[in-house]
Image (cartoon, rainbow, N blue to C red; front, side, top):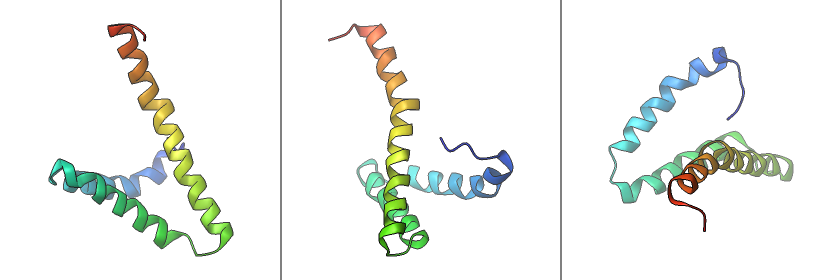
Length: 87
């Protein structure tokens, strides 16, 4: 997760929560595409079309992916190994 001060988060949290509620109202098979659109649109609006900016955008997306795996997915997998045994 991005470790930004709580004061910075406050200004965005209500908008993020509203988007999240809107996504939950969508059909499950459509929500991934909509989430992809939202993230893609945010990237498009915040990074110019230069190599430097696009390299930064890809870096942000890669860090998001890695942090999701490290903080959420890997602990979930570890718990399931404890519950069900390893391969």
